[in-house]
Length: 386
Image (cartoon, rainbow, N blue to C red):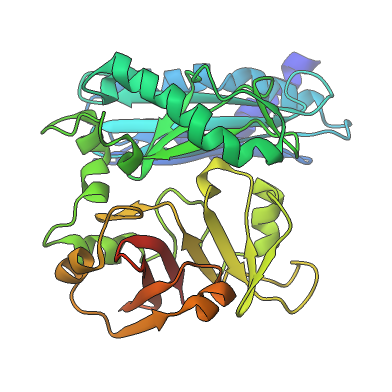
């Protein structure tokens, strides 16, 4: 009976997702969302289309299916029709011309009726078809591994210690993904569990890894977009404007106008909201939101009618704008003089929960970018608002 039901599911899936049943006619590499929603459960995963090398495309798609245990998840979903605990499989991914990276999350009744979370990942160099390992990113793999352990234990762990149900950030997990903004590590839930019973993640920016990163021509970091994140150049203004056209920072999964409750349900509150001049600052548990706050109104106690009105990042590398290193003179040379400059004294800084210093404002399409430097002229906070 179960086998017949699963066969029916597959037929339905093939009917609504032709990419599984036929060769794509696309000539440009792209990611197709493939999935099925069934009575409260859902299984969604990526599949590549449009690669010139069809054998490589098939191999990558097979690797995704295997790493994410997609067939088993579909079977499991069919068994949960009458169960109060459902299953959700979702993913995030990055595709450049020759690098594919994705992380897949199985959440809920994955193996038993007790809810849990399991991360998996697929990282492939599309020029060779070979899997990418962490060592491929660095000039000296041993030195980079030692740095990662030190960074996680000495900088990240103290920040997270009050927000963990349990956890050890080392050893470094083998499950990871790459994006233009940085490296994200995904932990087994038994190693790193948040207060909301989620498997923990940590995002490390390229600027934090720069000393160990191989940034040479043709390097993996260059091909994934790290170079554009780390260095200001004559094109930085265009790079920044293009990156912000959707009202979001690369690597931070939230956008201006998005419902707050939706984001809280997905990523969980890290702590109680803080109040600043103009509204509330919301911190979320996901590793991408470390030292990042979503800005929203303070009109009601709940979030049912609230949307993201702004995003503040105190950890960011974007188009060469790197918190902690980029100076006000450097960004003015790259981006041009700001439309408005605001001196922020101690009293105003307290009301905004920032350090005293200077804020420059730039209009980029329908959005406004605020770059805030401390009193030494170094970038400390980046704000994006409508």
